[in-house]
Image: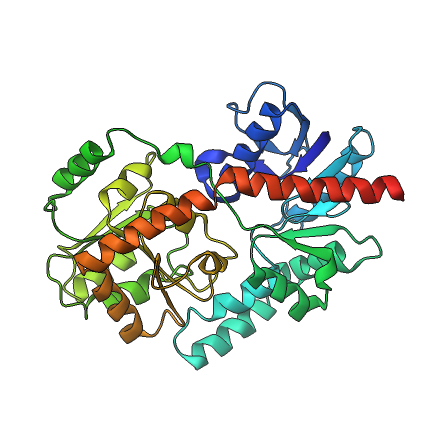
Length: 387
């Protein structure tokens, strides 16, 4: 199959969608598909055999940059022979649109939830409505999904499919749910117990102390402040929290200091090998205000870490609480979040949940995800042939 993938920047070290697309390209090449990538920038580590086509990136205002890339993709699509084309972000004209970050409108609304005060939410919403970029992206999204050309839509959770119906009235007949997945081989390590001990020793954490892990780039959206406030009420003095991701954590370190948690919360910033910190932890806490289907949850399950997350995370659909972890309704519910953390500190429950998490992580793996994805690709190819 001749397949075109469209994504503006493919730098897998940044994780998220970029790492997923990189893993997908490797699998497609392995299965002898002819893969074209349309992008403005890509990593040199892409496998041999990928045909890369550049959309030149020029200095452009933020509100217009996605339009420039989308038009560049359209131009190249006309000249590259292909059976199927997939757009992963703010593009249109492809056979399949796969918005891994969810809908722009839904994300904007969920971003308001991170403010505890209704007054702050009101002013944040007002400020957003005064932002020209908001309206530009909204127009672009409408063009993607509500134009006369109706692409097949792949979403990574039922949460996102509901958003398509709520915000745009798009029938479920046009939407296929394929939950996200990761390449679990990235988390295999024969020496994981040695790595666990090394990380803990370096951080001054006892081998038997319960350790929670928080991984994110957008600390505010992913609920780090509510997590620190909840941690204050957990009555397990040996509990530690590892925070990795964004190197800009100073305001959260100050919050931890004010709460008297500075000796138990370790702000580690960006890590080239986050895998080692998964091995060092006992469970993941991801109290997000919005995640279409969080890859960090899937990574945790693969490593045998039970998960605490929220109903705003599409990955919660893969859990059967309390088996592999716990789901709370609202990250601002300090009592519910602190109680969930307290329960994770119970070694008996945590041991059983860890085994269930590992089974679940192995059950929903990249092979199963890839098979479901290829079924959608073949379905679209059949429709195109019939037309």
